[in-house]
Length: 100
Image 1 (cartoon, one colour):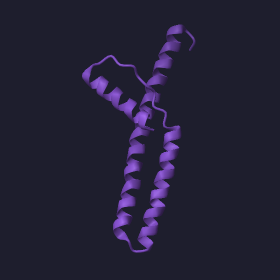
Image 2 (cartoon, one colour):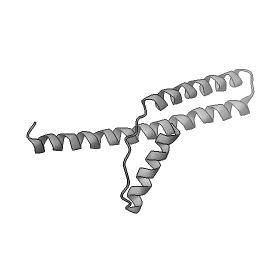
Image 3 (cartoon, rainbow, N blue to C red):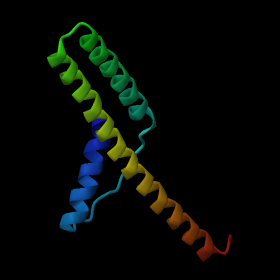
Image 4 (tube, helix red, strand yellow):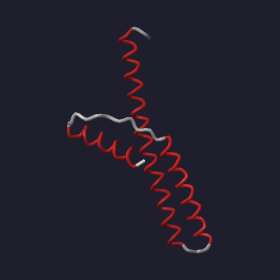
């Protein structure tokens, strides 16, 4: 998961500063599943702390679950955009080769 995040950052900053960089395709299937498990675990821990009246820990673990959810959402949006661009490039290439 860490390398995928790093690669997205490199692509974004490289495009901002105009560097010619190698581009990487973000694949969120495996890291996304792991993040969903972590979100669920943090949510259950947060609920457990709420039930036993430890509200501070409830907010901490609930906040971690929300933060991971937001990060996952952003990474999925980036992956979706990459898929859309790659599909458009494939369609253009097929039309150029007369395969369409």
